[in-house]
Image 1 (cartoon, helix red, strand yellow):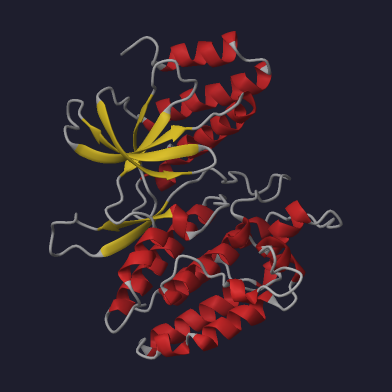
Image 2 (tube, helix red, strand yellow):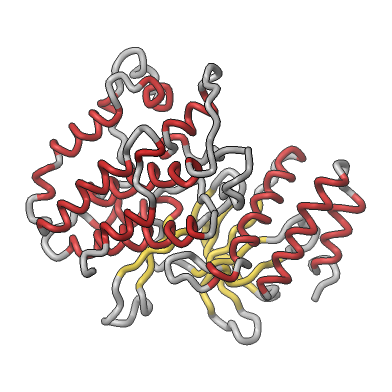
Length: 357
C-alpha cells in the first residue's frame, strides 16, 4: 500500500504533525483507525470514479468502480470528505468516525435493512479516508419517488414494503441504544433485492448516513440537528428557540427519529420527495419562504396542516388495501405526536406495518 495512504501515515499526519487540538485529534483519529481495524474493511487501491451523484455538508458522493483483485468491476458509491477550511476538518473526522463505528458494530453489520460499507480509500495527501457503500440501483428514496409515479393497485405493496424496511432498520438501531438523527428520504437507498437483471427482484430500502447518530442514548448532549424540515418539534426548539430550557431524556432521543419516520412515511404515501407544501405558509412566513420558523410557530397547527393535506390526497388512497390504509393512518397519528413520550416507539411502528403477523 502507498505509504501516503496507509492508516498509520494518516494518523501521524493528522494527530502528531498537524493537530493543534492534540487530545481531540488523537481521540478522533484513533477512533477512525480502531473502527477500520474492527470492521476488517479493505483498502481499495484501484478504483475508477464516475459521475457525481450528490453533495452534502460533509461529503460529495460519486459512482465508483472497484478494480482491485477480488472486486473487479464491482459498482459502489464513494463518499469523499469535503473540507473547505480548517474548521470543517474536525466535524468531518467525527462524521467519518461515527459512520465507521456503527458499521463495525456487530449487531448491525449484517442487517439487511441498513446499508453496508464496502471498503475505504485513502487518497494521497488527504487527511481522512473516503467511505464506499454498495451502489443503490435506484438511487435515494427521494430520487425514486420523483420518478416512479403515484402508487396504484398492487403498487401499494411496494409502498408498504419500503416503509416497513425503514421501520425495521430503525427498530434495530434503537434496540442497540442508537439514535439515527437524520431520518429523511435522502438518507434511504433503494435497491433491487437480487440485482436489476433478476426478474424475481423486489424493490427494497436500506437506511444510510449515520453521520448525525447518537451512540449513547444516556448522554446529555441531546439530539443532533439533522435536516430541520424533518426534525421533531423538540429538536427544533433546542436549536432555534433561545427561550427553550427543556432537556431531552434518555427515552426522548429515539422519539425524535420516530417523528422523522412519520414524515418519511407520509412522503411515501404521497409518492413525493417532500411532505412540505409551501401553500401552508401564511404571513409573515410566506415572503420569503420561512419554513422552519413556520414549523416552530405551529400556527396554524402543523398537524392540522398535515391532516388537511391527507384529506386533500384521499383520492390517491382510494385503491389502497383497507388494512394497509388503516395501518398508515394509525402510524401517522402515532408518529406525529407533538409530545415525545406519547409517540409510538419504532418497535410499535414495525409491528403495526407487519400485516402478516
